[in-house]
Length: 162
Image 1 (tube, rainbow, N blue to C red):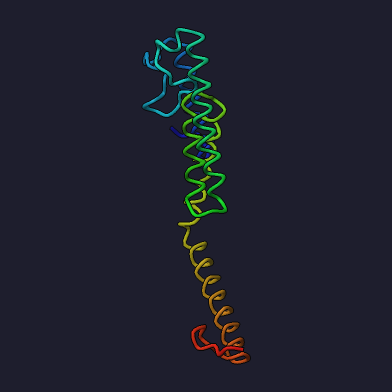
Image 2: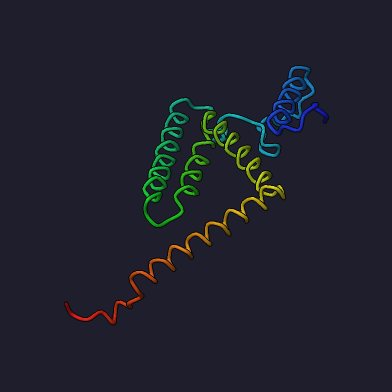
């Protein structure tokens, strides 16, 4: 589909609009959950749970609490050892099984990560990053050399009692 732009967000918006137009025209596939296409928004709870209001509300509370626990664990892991961001996005994925706002946040995040990955693969950007890394390492090497020249290098196990 040619949308007249190379922007990923516009392609997704055009696909969503086309899918909505087909649904209005009665040409939908019958399965509008979007699990195969990634376009469906809304609850992924089983039908027997969605059919009962109290059970569905309990399900949503449970999903929210579990997602919150995972997100809080990820936030705790940010300053501590662990993969904090991965855990936070895992908690968001748990929320996204039930809440539209979390699904939209995950779509936006996925789009931004994909765009950043594409920019990182650009040869000009890679060359710039390599150049900046080499310059940074050279500066660190010079600073370490100046420090060692000024104060010497004494290993901790050779320090005499003072």
